[in-house]
Figure (spheres, rainbow, N blue to C red):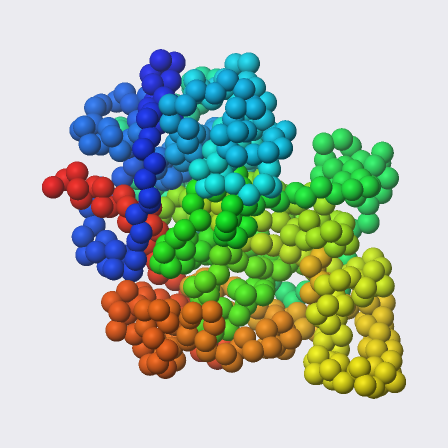
Length: 627
């Protein structure tokens, strides 16, 4: 029997979850010692998510469980989705589509309650409170989707703002404006641990309390559900010979080395030769547009540069402990690499991420994002088949349910750098924090001369160093040897043009250059997951970071050969040995199995080396309730 939730009950849940009075507090800071306590004292209920009464009235919960059911749990929606998928397999349901709402997928509570009890009646008043001088990003709502919001944020602003204002802008935009994703990619949920792709129902109701689709997800469940149990249950159904399925799956295959064809930019026809609403039509439309507005926007903060590493829509906070930041980047990295593997993309680690791999197979502890490169052919596949998908990784034994949005820049076929506003071709964004993977494609440029004269190329001599690694040193004598300069410049330009004409010289839109024979792919491990690095990684790193592969001290950090970790000098000193601080002793212990050097591979493991900060917080809450 189908269970239909009453409008009043679901509205009560939404009001309690989003509109309830919220006291802004500094978030707790978690360290490796908190992970140790978690591993030693896990609550018996840690794997459970509690379904709010508005979605299921099967039975009542204890008071503390009811309280937790009103807090955002990133595992709840994926668990309900997997329950629905399993049921559809058993029932033989055709063309399954999953319901989705941003307010259910992302924690919007603190952002929407930024103003407390303040009552504002116009976009002008809102702009004044947010501290925005030029505010054309706001519209007044005639029929608000929830009682406390009279405004709709319709686009980003790049003015430096407070964290409070940034949280509100992002949360409001998600609630009222951002389109629904097109599909969900479940990593590790398909048969034989393949990835599973399921479309999302695209109809969005005008009122957030009119959501019978979400309530139907809880059919057959009591008030508790476990993402891990649902994933295991679904896997057991795949193994049943009686189950016949027609869902799309992704299966990893060996990735061949890139060829020259992989770096060719697709040639677009006239706009009128494509059907409307197709990817090629949109690409052609963007390609023939005279000016390309900046597509990706960051959470620019007043008095701080930290916000530039967060997508403005999903920003929550800019300050994390070293453990928290690396824990988020750990799961973000693992999710992207697994997705890229299953989709068979020709993609590899780049820039600072490649440097981190070179040192110990981990992200640098000061890095705020990840960098990967991809062939133009793989980027086109990413845009055509996966743009605006959300990815959920249920591979790991410790499943947290965080989602990642795939967002492809619609101007990715325009390969000129321009003003530098669109040098990033795509992002893989953690919707819980706004941290992301920067994805840049390499391609043959349409006009070599334009690239040669690009400010970035000329300022850093990046192109010349591809053909002469000693160019930077030699160029220091050019002021007193103009003939030598002219001779060397002419020789290098001939080499560059020759490789360009042969289709073997590639660059991203941020003026980094590579030759085809540098980009053969070496399988390796990074953060405990299979990854690829370019065969000429040492040569590439040396020209991008001349001292980066040797310098053992960098901006307050030093590398310990004993622990094979970067350690903060403020806590551990400059001595070349280890560190007697418990947090860093534990860091060495927790990451031991996945650390490695280029010569000594690490382990590929389904067990994460870091417990997500949300799970640490949840466990503390559970233990407090149960004592």
